[in-house]
Length: 149
Length: 165
Image (cartoon, rainbow over all chains, first blue to last red; front, side):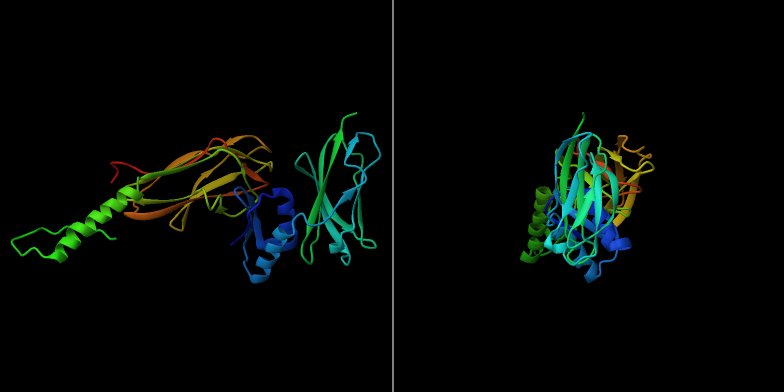
């Protein structure tokens, strides 16, 4: 069964979120005329989860102390203190560099805020996604553009 | 409206029921066939690439790459032309067509080589389809990493073959 939304979402972060929260219950995602999550197990709870992932994509507010920088500048610091994550213990993150998977992992939430450091970024466009793996599975992102010296 | 094989008239009274069945209904059937069946339909995608991470077969585009054709019982040729890529180093794209709910795997690409452009074009004849309405859907999967098929030159064409019984 496909759970779809009539909008075009970026496939890599959506795939990461879907696989993180639905595990082997999902075969992947597709983006074309719309965006779809492909459920292998279409139980009601999995349908609800997939719908929540789509409905709350982009709903987390993510900030950074700089979004444009030059190689060699101080490392940018990314933060998220969105009320959605206030009671969570951690969130997952995904970093894309020029559209490709660059890094991913889990980060702790301390006093309602998660902090990520983008260490020694090279020239390129970094898209940093943060997403919940519980609750409403909300996600958000910020883009940091690094220019050559 | 169903097709009724015309009867062979003999010396008998001509009744309105026969006229309705043998003439009117069959003319309606033929008119509907002409209106609906021009035996070819196609979709050309000029923008909006398709991407998937699905490792099992899924519809490529349930709206646009989903053609219904009314055929007269001849073979049907399905043509798909395009090019794509797979992000994973050992990634392959596999394409298929679902005809009336039955899946047929048609094409499997070479490994994409982490972003190398690959052809995903094929032309395939489905024989043995009965006269009537048939649904043709493009489907695909990727074995490793995100699969992409580019718009712009993408064509999905379904047509009944003339002269092929």
